[in-house]
Amino acid sequence: MDLIPHPGILKAFGLRDEDFRLQRFESGHINNTFRLRNLHGGGEFVLQRINTRVFTDPWAIATNQRMAAAYLREHYPKYLFLAAIPTLDGSDLYETKDEFWRLVPFIPHSLALDQADNPKQAFEAATQFGRLTRLLSGIDLYDFRPTIPNFHNLTLRYSAFQDAIRNAREERREYAEELTESFLRYSFIAVQFEQLKTDRQFRDRLVHHDTKINNVLLDEKTFEGICVIDLDTLMPGKIISDLGDMVRTYTSPVSEEEGDYSRIVIRESYYEALMKGYLSELGDDLTSAEKNQLFYAGQFMVYMQGIRFLTDFLNSDIYYPIRYPEHNFVRAKNQLTLLEQLNQKEKALRHIIGTCL
Ligand code: GN1
Ligand code: MG
Image 1 (spheres, rainbow, N blue to C red):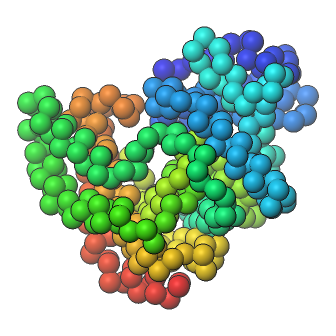
Image 2: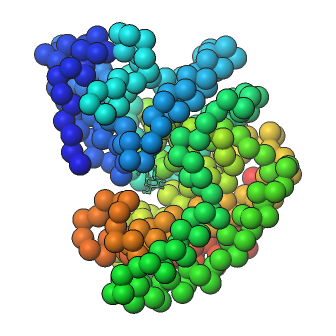
């Protein structure tokens, strides 16, 4: 779906259409994102249409962000948190024709990378995500709502995977049989999650839940971290989500899209850099139960993403947009390869974690 914002939208936020040129951002599977380029050199913005097929309760996003913003403003007034710019009516979302639009400031002289090109960038990004969770560590989670219920609930993802295997069309099931078997052999990762869920020491925190490097703004010259973006899934969860997704997306030189699986490797220097960055912020705050799961974080996220892609392939591609018929299969196999690499390097990676703690 490729909706162009209609004229009334900017007006709702007190902006004039004639002052801006819209430029589409390509990255991201879920929302539609546009940069508003100011034709007269004034302030610029980012406009997003929220995908309500995925985020069925957009007000949960708005409420969570409002509570986090208020807390941060009170306790850490210097921290840059990209809260939504309200409409002229004072609403964090503009609702029109069953669509929800949100406006945030565009930060000048910033950039978002699609891929980490050196360990320093991984360090900077991880520091930003660690800082967000650390600064919010004292907030009362009671009023926060899940913006996607069970988003990183591996137990449910695993049972959705099993359902998909059962219900898949014959040719898809056969095509993916070997890959499916491989993922089933790693079910201990889901079992471990089951045990963690009941451990009270393994605490809930506000985590970002989508820590890809392009969700951090860096200074365009120094590449220092500025702030995190894409706060739709800021909600209570576990640190293994954020740390694990960084392991998943920063350590390999190629992304989840790569179909030449021989190029997928874990670069230890990036692993170390992201671990250092994350723990430089959050290390002192973590419980021992959390510290014990730092290696598991990578397994957890890579495995969950792998079965999510494979589930979608088996379901005939109802969630992730695809560009060719086996696209979700390739993504899943890519993630399995990454998981294998992670497990092969377990000893070395655990050693790195030990030096970072
Ligand atoms: C989706 O849209 P994007 O790329 O930010 C997905 C993440 C996956 C990611 C995989 C709401 O995020 O969980 O990790 O694709 N977000 C949602 O590329 O499902
Ligand atoms: Mg996202």
